[in-house]
Length: 460
Picture 1 (cartoon, rainbow, N blue to C red):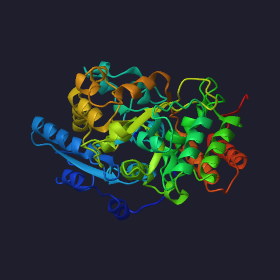
Picture 2 (picture 1 turned 90 degrees about the vertical axis):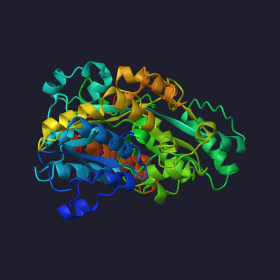
Picture 3 (picture 1 turned 135 degrees about the vertical axis):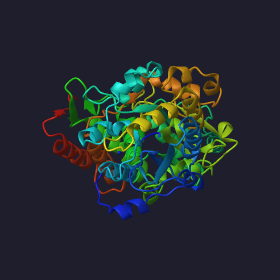
């Protein structure tokens, strides 16, 4: 969710802690401790509370029992942060700055690793990983996602994800659309959305995340899913190691967004720009039959499982998935992958016990449990082959099959600020404040400001 992505803001310590909240399951995790920092007898763990979902909180509660039983006298204290993605990242960084407030373990989005290393927040784990017998079982791509530009590894991943179009077969049938939908181009997707709009009043035809409210979800699940289907220049040129500006692909992506909202094919713009909209989409709109098509991650159906925030027994009969086509149908389906890691801050008070906790939470048994319940694509080879995972979800095979052609975000230190510029550009065209061409020019200016000389003009 995955996931995890920002315009800085200032919070006092009191305001910061006042922003932490959780569900009853999450609250139960915090029964021990609650003071600043960690004592020698405790391990403080911070993670994001995703809306009403308690999948991770419930999972971690089980890990806590296992860890404390194996380590007498040591307690695990959880501090869930209930916030949108942007706010979570900012609050996490504020916590890590001081030994007084730093957790021992943080749940870190892979795309933030380089920026947090540059800020001096995280500890390299290579010495510990070198003697851990489980580390060779982690897939190379997952290891690469947790590795920084300095060649060192700063986190242990717990799963990854891919992305595609989720669609409601019942709504498609009511609108006279094929329930085995196979869109080949962007136009095919928009045509289906227009049909839904004309034949099913009150149903949102298509959701593509936009704006700054949902943060990184806009960038990876919306904008980049479109950009990498244009056949134009990518976000970042890996050979030149420079950020690409002046790309026609950017204009095309922003034009798609403008079409979506100017024709009323997407959600209400105020709703789409809310900070909790990604939770609203999967916890309310889709199970309520209010949204026909959604461009989202493999993890979306985790919300509808018995362990999810909105259990929905019929979801596997109602919902289907199809690959996101390229702009003109001239390539395989597009997918983007992200992922999260467990990392140790530089200012952690109990790094040795933090490492023992990370080994426990990412063991084969625990990663199998989490990947099944949270609908994650495994990053351990032994979990990927585990019969429990293979049989757990009817969409697992489809989404795992997208890994072959998936793209990963360029997780350089400036990426979070590039991502913010992307979110601002999409928001500007969706609200009608800027044309696609104007918003693309604004984006190019922002990239120049952020990346300095590390930019390159598009070749086409």
